[in-house]
Length: 170
Image (cartoon, rainbow, N blue to C red; front, side, top):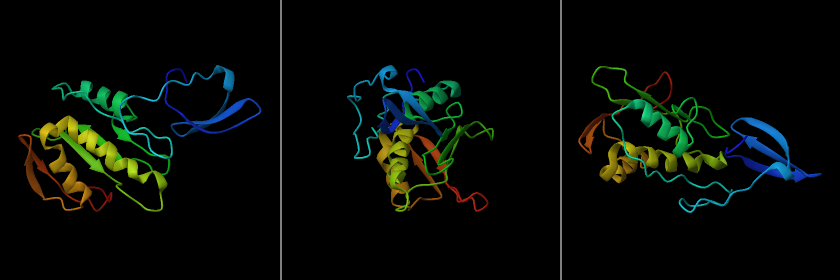
């Protein structure tokens, strides 16, 4: 678990109960080095620190995957963002159709029954920063208000949005 973000759920008898990804484990308190809270990003009541993306978009999809993995917490080589309570909340796939630069699928946005669901819109906004830079608020507002045009332009990119009934995604 060296240099990985994890969540501490409790402590007992000199051990921390932690969660890394989907794995629960117990680790000796003496072996855990607790770092400083990142200076960027807001910390929420549940201890989650929102990521703040400062990286720029790259023509190389592999660089973008690494950015998503290292800066926003995407898994599966930078293609999937998951929360504890849900699976595949956001998926990013580069390429595909010849003219398609990237495909983004949102399987989840907010659910009052899932405490951490507020994180999806925050991570989505950071994801949008990577692709839409100056127009990030325009794109994020469409999604956050659930009023997404079928086709629009942001930062010179044409976006085609559609609901996929088979997967329940946008």
